[in-house]
Length: 128
Image (tube, rainbow, N blue to C red; front, side, top):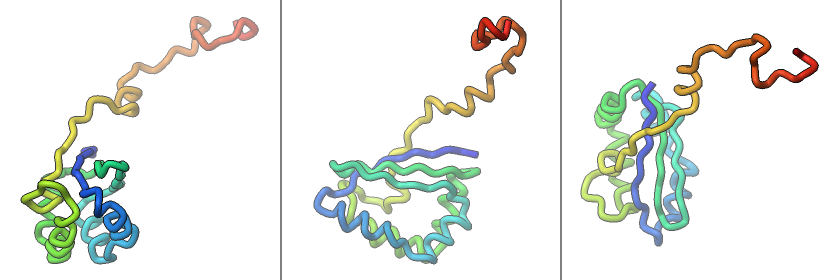
């Protein structure tokens, strides 16, 4: 599963309205995102308008292509475009994708199984 984090800049004078629009996304848009492979999708908005998005998908390019084939996405992106600073493409094409540099579960899974012998640092003196 690919984990994707991205940023966009929301116009500060439109932040409240942007948040309200996302409190009740069109049901057709929600279904289209799900059907195109966008899972665990969240948006976070900072007080200065920085928008951070996170999603998981088997393939970001395929998920974006799936959305590009829907009429609802074209309508949604057209309406959302006015909320962003310096964006000359639809928002779902103009975000800045961040590189993942750490993921706890990946690193934990890579660890060798821990020993349960008496040399365990978590054993108490009574256990020994």
